[in-house]
Length: 247
Image: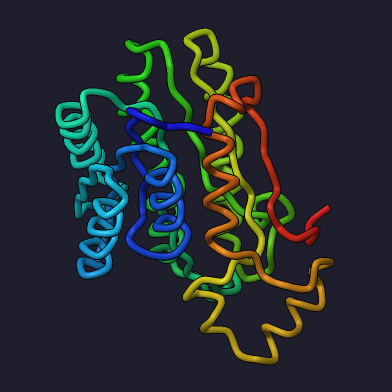
């Protein structure tokens, strides 16, 4: 795979999976723009790591649910990089509760960040890709959106929505040589999973056929492949990376 001279946008990238995707793309020759919500220190560190790999990095602090801010970021990335070849909709949050305890705010916040954020960035970036008649989009979904998870009605709905968005959008833009795929992740070793209790972690491990959590670096390599020229004949697909957890 080679992304030499290409430019990518990765959302929600200051830490964890987004950070790993940014670094893998940079290693492959891609200039990277990313946004973050609050982790300014982590964002600055990621920019430095990308620069150390010999690539350009641009960072923006914004709410992915704010279309005006998103549109402004995409325009600025296009101005500075001169192109936008790849988009990774990774930004996501959880507000896990049983539905009887879930507030309207819990629902809205998760849907706005996870699903509306993907819509906002896709809409803005596709305007650039259509003119170039080239591009690839990867939506970071979850097995929660495939099989549903108790206590995650909002999260599961948002991730299932990303899968529907992926399939519809892939059909809309295929004629312009733009691919759109989704990556449905299982349990990945991030700050979120490290905060789980030992008993709960073990109970989850017992349900995974590979008996381990995935790593952000593994996700980064899978994401890079799905964005690469090696995967140009793959579009509208949901690839599960979950250690065999979901059917």
